[in-house]
Image (tube, rainbow, N blue to C red; front, side):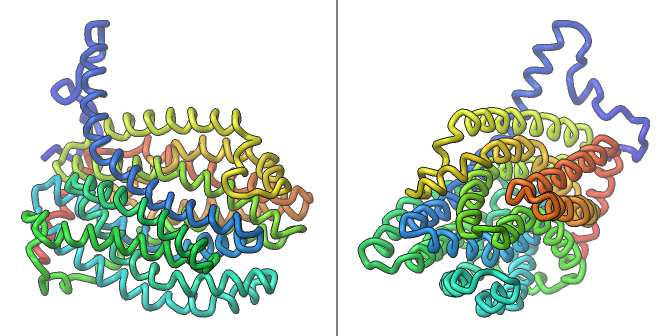
Length: 482
């Protein structure tokens, strides 16, 4: 193990090439290429899986949008606010698996990964039961919060059809992390690739042929996620992971308190990020001509969310790479992995932002036939481009936090940046200065920029050798508790 001393060079000659002299540039390029390959082994399938899952929502949303503006708004509220809130919380709680399984894999304690999976299922399914009333009483909740009555009624009915999906989230998200940390997330990529065409056909049948409308779109979404989940369970529990899955064990019930603490910190950290832009859609329901505003904004958020799946793949890849290297007591390599991941992610976001600016007047056509909606999307497309540009940096920094186990610290950063700065500033611009949707979104972007700067500062100041020591200590403690 490396000594816990801050004066030890983070990148020594034995670990990474000496950069002095032109001849060493090629060696550095080889190191970058080697790290990139390790990163893409995780980030590539992870991004593809997320793009495909999110693409299922986009397909259902597009079918709903071509039924009518009310149906599009109702489906957007149900998926973004009601289902989206629980999804964001579960994504966060499941990220504890990235920290622990990633470090266990790096430390070659493979047997603990199956125990962590079972603990995560126990915790997430318990929370799924506790959060069920938000689906059942979603109409009353939305009405009490001041949303239009008809929109609340329609969104409430859609939410009820999505209740089974709520429990699917609690099963599939930890399972994805379990496979991802042992570099088997290609299984999830293959499974979702198979489920996607089924989803398109099922949505078409339920919405168009059986004329179930927006409810058929919600039913198809639940069916497709469930199908993919069954495929993943069959692989993981059916012999595909012999080293890490050794059957159900009573050890899953041991030391749940510490696991809950890390899961809760992870849940708060990532759900605050996930909820942030969902709150933007919710607040838009209060502006003048709310239905049009919600439609336009939900389309832009759908584009941003779809593109964000690429960077969430980098979040996953960064989290796994950092956790693996810290678990192997190699802080310098964890730092190098962070640099490579952030550079790659930012270049991708820059390219997509430019595409958004080029095709700004065509973005709304996929989701709506209404010229008013298409024009409204065009009017806020420059904010979409800026949001996507920020997406290239922030998720990688969150991935470093997940891999290092900083979830509790980042949760406080998110609260301050998003909810003490971003949301109030959005209120000031949106209502105080009468900039409407654009003002609300600008406020949200300011919050994201503050959070990104703070996380960048924390990462730059990090003592990676100390983090490696913490990871090794954690692995010994959690292994002894099995």
